[in-house]
Length: 128
Image (cartoon, rainbow, N blue to C red; front, side, top):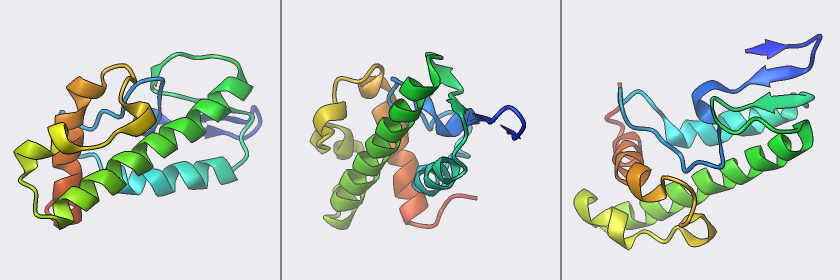
């Protein structure tokens, strides 16, 4: 939701500040699409980007954190796609994926299996 007079953009489920991406639960998340959503949101040049989860901080820090969150999603998607293309079984991906600088983000180990499953479904066109 964007409040243009105030320059505030509430990012809902596509922005977790300092938390590893969580896409589980209802199985309605589209992590690959989230990357483009974040890019379009940044192009709106809002004064403040408010995450749905995580910490609310100064507008400058939240802008930088949104960029980092997008980068974590890009890493997650590219690594999952790489392993999918290598025909790695879904259940093996969480222990083979290279999270790089994002491996120690809060809840990475917990959120990774669901995130990988969603991306496999998205890649295969099986999300409704």
